[in-house]
Length: 78
Image (tube, rainbow, N blue to C red; front, side, top):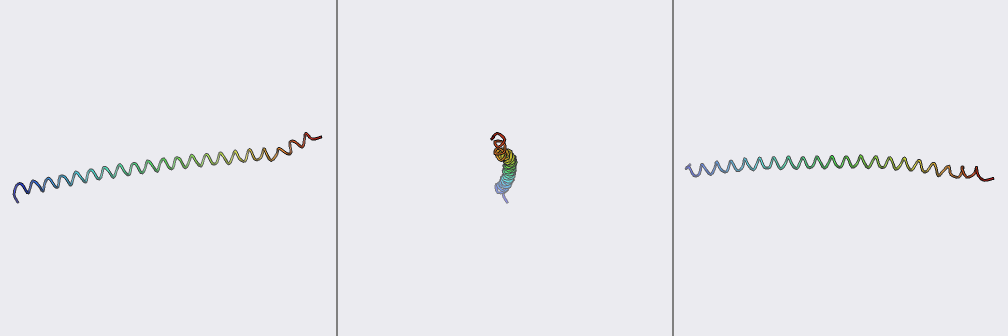
């Protein structure tokens, strides 16, 4: 091999190494973004579940008050 050909091979290997490093960085960033999105989705799901539980609790409280309303008015009827 001549000096020029050897230099070209070395440059190609350096470029491939740089490309491999860039791909590894891009993969790590994509994984990080995916993990962050999963964390946000999990947090939203937990908040939704808490909200649903609060709605169900409020519904039971209000329903029991409405169910007893007729009994309360019966006390005032002579």
